[in-house]
Length: 342
Ligand SMILES: NC(=O)c1ccc[n+]([C@@H]2O[C@H](COP(=O)([O-])OP(=O)(O)OC[C@H]3O[C@@H](n4cnc5c(N)ncnc54)[C@H](OP(=O)(O)O)[C@@H]3O)[C@@H](O)[C@H]2O)c1
Image (cartoon, rainbow, N blue to C red; front, side, top):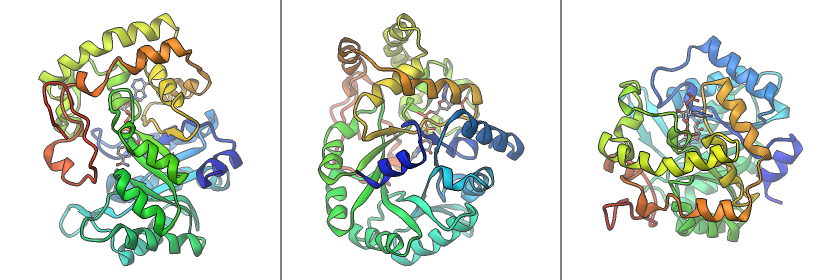
């Protein structure tokens, strides 16, 4: 059994984990610390046992927050963080750096902020094109051997990179965007994960909120919300994409579920080795999402969902050209209105 599945079993975790990024990064003004701590505490009480953070999120503030929230609970959770992409305090911008010495330094700093001597999974957040993957993964492998991390993780990598990495050192988990409207892992990555015994941790499993049907107007998102820079969320594409939700929301209603629960249940049906980590700032949403853990979809429902939002029906790429430049992939899913949109 993979290290990740073994650990999830050990801590009796639901397969659905919690993405903690949202508290401090990406989706507008960070949640004030007291409220964020209360929400994470409630998340633990309602049953979440897999917490995902990163050096990058909130320029390290998210790790500090999660470290505080999990004090006294560390041995009862799967704790995952990421390295290799951070905000440089001097430059004030995001820097990708996968050199072994950087990953080691960042690991020491993550451990300190997270108030632990051990991370269950430590992901290379982005491939550094200047550093062969074998070197970055080799460095993470040494951290496993020293007992600082339980498993090596990779994030946003292609199937080719995963296969190369797994020759150097076993890869416990790959984190990749995967949801009904982002099917890229189905092109090649999922197969490579299964070949290498790697778990696929599905990030943005709710389509960054789209699949919940709660974002009715993009203009109402805060100005600093990163979705304003994502082509799928620009006003024109979004209103076209919204039409894809009509049948989907009706299907959820017929089954007495919320659209978000239906989206998570679909992901869970892709296999025990696919682990969704929805993110939320709201304890009500966290509770609602966890209900999907117990939903089983019948074959007819799955067959209908499988063809409901295929890449050729979705308008806009998931990332802007600038964001896409940081992504290692040879697998592009063509989107609606384009023959080749990364
Ligand atoms: N490896 C990577 O490069 C990478 C990239 C992105 C994300 N991630 C990880 O994946 C996690 C999740 O991804 P994500 O946050 O981008 O996307 P997501 O989980 O697909 O969606 C999050 C959005 O959905 C909303 N939401 C959540 N549950 C809801 C519900 N039941 N009803 C209505 N709205 C709901 C949230 O708003 P509310 O706060 O209002 O609930 C938030 O705006 C992150 O926290 C992070 O840990 C990793």
